[in-house]
Length: 474
Image 1 (cartoon, rainbow, N blue to C red):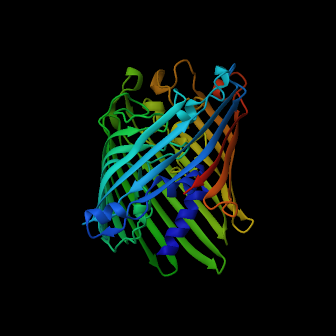
Image 2: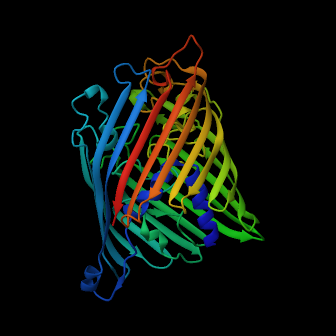
């Protein structure tokens, strides 16, 4: 079973640049396994401390955005986490997070995009974790401020301040026990080693990566009642095939109901290579009839179907990926998804750093992705190339919904807009210099192929974006 978890985790990282960042930051965003104390005093003495400190640089260049064709952001920051030992199964976790822009680009407002890393105030700090936890071998429950990692409600690790939630969440192992790894990070089914495990969560507020505050709104609405989610995962082995199946239900109150399903398999081909594959489906059919961004009401009728097939060769891997989202004329974005707590996090197989069918759709996307390890495994390169075709392209202005059918106001959708994206991530482990030190760079470039009579400012291209960070974990 451990082989399955390791293989699936590797496949996920190869197709997700957000997951690439998660691989570097995840051990810092969570907390170490609490020791089991004999008294409250022992529990306090067994408190563990972890965290990170680093620098982050972001660059965005777009030929089509006049006056703002190049924007930059820079931040220093990090986090500090404390987790007490467990007494009678109970423990407490705290996590403070901060990012400071230092005003590096503030003298030229047209090129200052500090809000990308540190909010519009150029300074961001918050207590993103403050929870009470109960755990045993079969159950782990948290209440309070916390991180969770589910397909469509997760952290989006693109800044020093990952998305956090306020509410309740729990994971139960129905068949088989967990090895305890889930407690090293956000509550999730991804790290659970039980044969059958389930997760439930009810969240009321959230703290976005652009804000210091927990709020009741989300990316679409200024006020909501939060969401509820249920998920189940089954993993096993048949003959020479390790397989996993998971299913999730979400109710984003007042907006949409969603079902997500995914199936994965891994089978060895020889001593040095494996064949792996995945299939996914998202359905928000005819839900969210009261969804009204910008004061206009739409129903939500979105579907996405995707697949992935690839091979591993030692530590390296390569895969073909694809997703298809059919049109549903008259609904939000004529068939576009509503995903209030997820930003191109790699859930959809063809996600890249600035693009994804969930925002651009309906339409289709296909491409190739891989992972290359070099220099004794210290250097990792994750290249991806994706071709997108949006039935109603609108340039990716994903936070503007004031026009017809929820498209940005004043933007005429471009039929069959083709967008070509190359995306690459690089990370290097500098532990030889200093234990816990690493550097990473994630970059993408895109070009939109539009009809000569139609233009779109966001994709009057090419455009380029880059995220670079240096971090020290302790």
